[in-house]
Amino acid sequence: MWHGERRHARLVEVYDAEFPWGWEDDFFMAVLAERSTHRVLDLGCGTGRLAIAMARDGRRVTGVDTDPAALDAARGKPGGDRVEWVEGTAAQLGEAEFDAAFMTGHVVHRIGDDAWPGLLRSLRRALVPGGRLVFDSRDPVGGAADDGRKSIVLDNGSTVDAWSAEGEREGGTVLCTRHYRFPDGSEITNTSTLRLRTETEIRESLVEAGFRVEQIYGGWGREPVGLGDGELIVIAGTIG
Image (cartoon, rainbow, N blue to C red; front, side):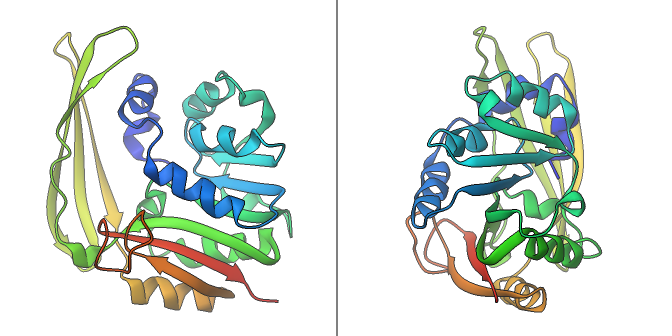
């Protein structure tokens, strides 16, 4: 479920430094607080920043990811012992286990069309009747992203340079290569094929899987689609 480049053990520390707590995390925590939600799934949890925060108020949180290095980092963080960490996928989830499920950090881009319907069905099965599914995706109508060029300062004070190169889009897919250059001159790159779904595609696939779309926002300030941050932030509920 995670970004391919993060499977490299050297990049776990880089990821946490590159993506500290942000307004998207505040948004997800606010959505979580809108209802009494005790059992929470964070699918594609990565190094566990959001899952640990969700567990601080006594919720039973399960973080699921396919990357053992990321999960090891999550377990070692303060508060990591409050979360159940599972190496695996949505296919392993049981029935009616959770009140809410989250997929954050644009993790849905890594899920191809062959796997997307099955993933949604697995999440529908894992949620209780009336449960909520929340996730974020880039709006493909918003145009190409910038190169994300930045200098990332690690805890030891060293700096890693990072940038992206996005290839031409074909249908709903785009080839994206992420580069990381370390102070010793070494470089790690990863190329991923991303699937960017339109608002219509997302709505139709959710309904087909047994969800009711409650809201889709275009930005973290809950702006309408097309008027926010180039996002499609989805809140859907199970039917029944």
